[in-house]
Length: 187
Image (cartoon, rainbow, N blue to C red):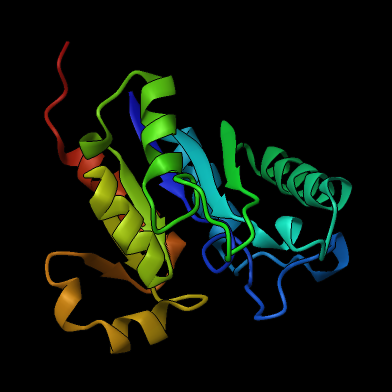
């Protein structure tokens, strides 16, 4: 099974220091939805693992959160793609659980549910906590420069040794699909 897990804010959609609180504030990163559709069309199952502390802080409600994901799925369907599942941590930052990144809980839970080893799963993020969560889960950390990615790359340059870095999700998807196509086909 070919699986990719993505962070949401900063990878799929534009991020904001004030949180993405409503459908009106949600805007896809250019090329991200097409990248997800290409992954799906190449046989990958795509999942999301996202911290959503705005829920725990009361900045937005579950209806607003769901409407954003409904729009995401609708736009992906129009492109021939989809998100197979969304894991989220609504924890307030002052009271984090094992699910809130940088803890590996969401990634480990997805791997368990999918009955795969986490070390076979790439996790694409834009922040240092995404890299930490991937490493803690023994998943494959991937950094994109969208969202907080450029700042993360600058601030954690030494710690990012061994982490693949791409300009955006589209660049990563293209590289991943090309690598899969280069593998010998077993008949």
